[in-house]
Length: 368
Image 1 (cartoon, rainbow, N blue to C red):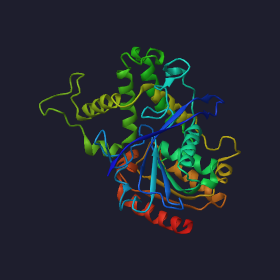
Image 2 (cartoon, rainbow, N blue to C red):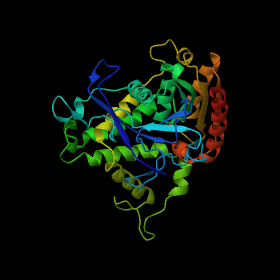
Image 3 (cartoon, one colour):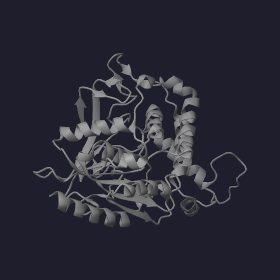
Image 4 (spheres, one colour):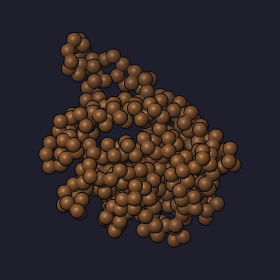
């Protein structure tokens, strides 16, 4: 399945801060066909460093999408039956308006003049796109990690527009530890002299700082067991010994590679803005409690977590489940066994596929 990324531009978008972005672009991809009644649309929302290329082979890069093992004919999100949409989030750097976009007021990239954004702002832009496509009610919204935050926001802010919600490996609010990891990444970027207060476009980007930020983040995506299996204490060279600061251990080499690779595809300022949006996200904000917030939702929920995910541990999913059940919400919960840590939602497709396929079938039957 060869796919292309499309971009639609809206005249303006009013943010939670009250600032109006004018204009605003949103990059998106679609898979499958929208049925005549427009009742089979599913919005898939990406995690922090993802983008709109969720499935298929991209016509330009030739690379598969980040959730290609879950989206496509016969897969969990079966494109023979459903119409799947994926957008790049607001503040991103892969086609949607963000810090690297041109500020029409100055003719230069926004850089740090880009306004602060929220998860709610991201979802508001997605809602505009969904309406632009002629869809009034989504069959489902699904996503893991930061994508799960967007799923929750959709269900609470637009209850009549979502039939089913799949928040996977996520949370209703960041803990102090989760905020701390993001702050280390931000400080690594801002400590890089090449960051230059965010004004580095057209010059040398803060590659060292961004690479370190990615390395720190990547550690949190894995588990102790998965790192043990993948690397152990193995040296890159059997005759090497760890008496220098070179990347002699395989894990050192791997992290450095992941960091340098990330620099080529992600913008440092987007890293700052998006991680901050994640940190300030609190689904209960504006309500007395999390149960009261989730009481607004009308969707049926399937909440999934993973045993080895220490970045978004299962207790945070259970908080959402408990809140939903306390207010009579329709919710199913499953904790899946995995050694892959937080990355499990991207790679553990077997059980996820069965859970999601069965859940979608029931919801679609009721919606049809």
